[in-house]
Every structure is written in C-alpha cells, then in structure tokens.
Amino acid sequence: MKSAALLLALSQPVFANDADLAKQLANPISSLISVPVQGNLDFGMGPGGGSKFTTNIQPVIPFGLNEDWNIISRTILPVVDQEGIALGGANDAFGLGDTVQSVFFSPKSSDPIWGIGPVFLLPTATDSLLGTEKWGAGPTGVVLKQSGPWTYGALANHLWDFAGDDGRASVNATFLQPFVSYITETKTTFTFNSETTYDWQREQWNIPLNLVVSQLMKVGSQPIQLSAGVRYYVEKPDGGPEWGLRFAVTWLFPKG
Image 1: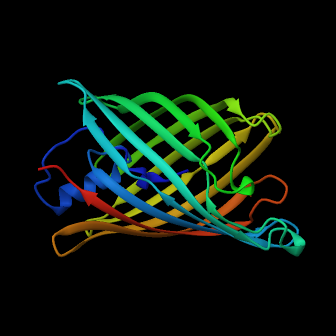
Image 2: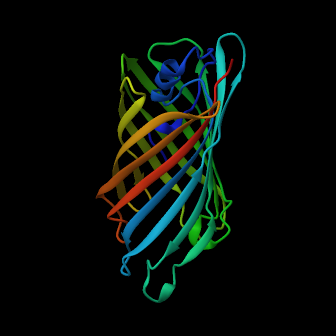
C-alpha cells in the first residue's frame, strides 16, 4: 500500500518547468492527476518458498471543493499472481484483489501539508485466496513537510469490516507509512519508507522497508516517472515474504 510515490494531489498550480514538476513529485500529496502502475515481486513465501507478484493500479484524481479545500480520490486496485506458496500448489491463484478507496479532504494552503478523510475496503477479489470477502471502512490521514530537496511525513489508515462473509476472518488492521525522500538536480528521487501493517485480530506485524529510486523524464510531451527499488521484511507473519522488488511507471497529468 504504498511509497512516497503515492501522489495524492492536494492543489493545482501551473507547472512552469520540469524542475518544478520534479519537486511536486517529491511531495507524496502533490497537485497532480496521476496514474501509477506499481509492480511488487515478493519472494520466500510459505513452506514452498513461493513468490507473489502484485500489480497495483493507483489512479489519483484531485477535485476542487471550493476556494479553500480540495478532495483527493486515491484508488488502489491490485492484480495478484501468486504461486508456489504452499506445497502442491494449493495457494496458487491469479486475479483481482480487494480494492482500497481513500478520499482525502485537504486545505489548499497549509504548512505542514495535511489531509484527512475516510478509507473503504471493497471486496473485489476474483478468488477467495486473494481477498477478505469483507466490506470495510475507517479513517485515513496524511501529513508532510517539504524543505528544499527534502520531503518527509507519514500516511496512516485503519480498517474495520462491517459486512461480508461471516465465515471469513474479521478485518481490524492499522496501516502506517512513514517516508522520507530527497530529490537531486537531475530530477532523481531517492525514497525510503516503511509500509507497516498491524493486524489486531491476529496480533501480527508486517513491516517491509523499501528503498526506491525514481527518475522523471518525458516521452514526447508526456511526463512520466520510472521507479525501481528493493524491499526487506524486518517483521512478518508466519509464511510471509522475506524480501522483494518494486518497479513502477507513473503517468503524470499536471494542470495548466
């Protein structure tokens, strides 16, 4: 669920040049319509030492509510391919996972930058192995500070289930994503974050540490950002992955 390239878009200035655009990209809640497609490959899962490839499709769309406030819609739709996790292929599956939909209300001008709102869990999984079969909801929030080439802050949410299959485990989970990033004069961004989850139902931590390098460029007149990184799990549930890789391409649509 997701890194400094989350791109939640809070205001809508005109981008005068690529340097300004790169600075906005260093801000995980910058004023950008964006369509990130993020691939995550995790290794060493389960007794079979299997792997899991998750492609997160993450459109981020800001709307002006009035002169002072924005609404930012952020959707995470995962496409999952997992295999070899259990001996005999019992947990092999491919398809859609559950969708997480966040809505942030944020002032157009604030220092530090912040946003709060609701988050929803939608049971869109096409296979019972890939989702919770539960409807969920809860609060979400983000706060960050930019100082020169540095951006640092944190995003958090909590989800409880309120409907769904009674035979499935309840959802009661906290997500916390602290992050720090540094952007160079060549529009290269170095990001370090954690995407920590605590499952209150099972009393389990899942703590991956991510180091990602991103580069802003243009294909014709279309700005895009390419990212690649590595991930190590310092804490994980039984059968969880040991390490992983991340690749992403983000299509950017600045206003103006």
